[in-house]
Image (cartoon, rainbow, N blue to C red; front, side, top):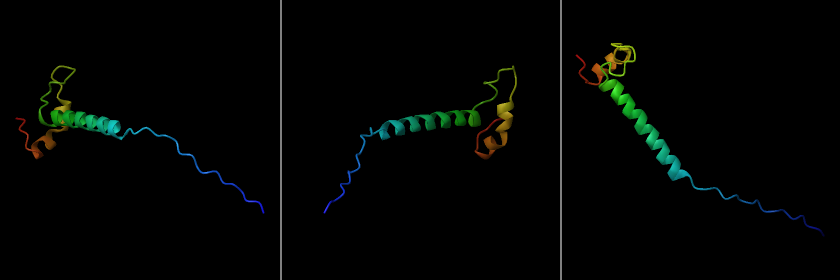
Length: 72
């Protein structure tokens, strides 16, 4: 009587990158949130490239009032 031998699956060593990926995700989230907070709350045309262009201010104007930021 012959028996077939089945090889056990080999596991590969995978490096644990969960701490690194979590730190990168947290850093990116904080950066995006800080930029959004600045543009919504404090930009009065200071990031304008073309003089007194306030497109960003006007784009977020209603959200600024809704969130309680003064702008006038």
